[in-house]
Image (cartoon, rainbow, N blue to C red; front, side, top):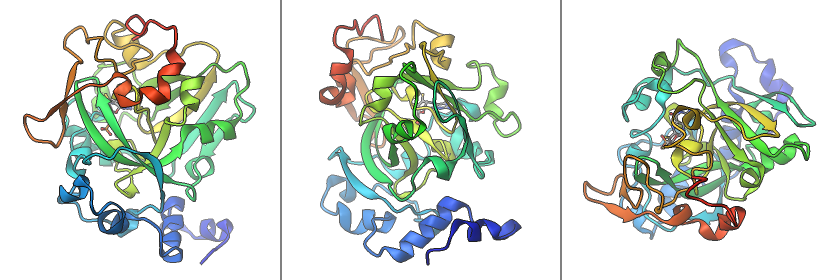
Length: 329
Ligand code: MTE
């Protein structure tokens, strides 16, 4: 089954199978013990509350979109948010402000082929094809809570690679103190960018130690399958201790920089959206409290207390020792 890459790319036109899909099919056949979506439903977590709740809901697994991945130790032992909510209740303002807009309109976004431009303070600037940046043989699943600044949260089984693995590969210079990300922008495919809600393209950034923290993750899949466009296909950030808006979707550019980069929400309303944006129940949003959050998919009245750093304080609090987290919100 193992063919050399040039054989794959030599096929013409419609016969070309995108590399991740190809690799994926190959691996499903080659590795009988792999955990795909079938494994998730059938054998990996059969006894948990998550399974009892049938998190996949009405979704029929698509064999063409399955990913092969390993379980990791980064997994909340909590009920998963149902598939239909994870992929149907989204924020992706490039496609509109309504929570259903991304699921409705994001399929217009072209995600194949996909390349990522890398620039700034790095030994390896250039334009990388997705499969040259992400090792699809080393995908892992991480179950993280995503806490949105709008005071709701979800528990999501993401598939991807640690952000640190990509950064190490790109060899930033010691002068790079921050990493900045930019989202794809295409006016004919993204109906939401007609509205100047923010200064497009969507931009985000992390301090280098945050980016290298083992929790910071680049997702290419969710629920065992390739990411649906509305969740930020083909590659998006997941920074579980920060409000969801730091988790930038559909990344096309990574820049290593010396100074704190501008970020879309911080530029739009600095008082409401900080650069750090660590989940903090003590620091209210100027227009609403952050003390509790609505549990998406948990029923109309399901709420929980918001935890400092979204519950990940043990892994991340040290990075902010001595910082005033109300001022640096
Ligand atoms: N990335 C882009 N490019 N555009 C966006 O509007 N919204 C952010 C973040 N990433 C957003 C984005 C916000 S506010 C949240 S809460 C999460 O994506 C939502 O991710 P999800 O839709 O996969 O749950």
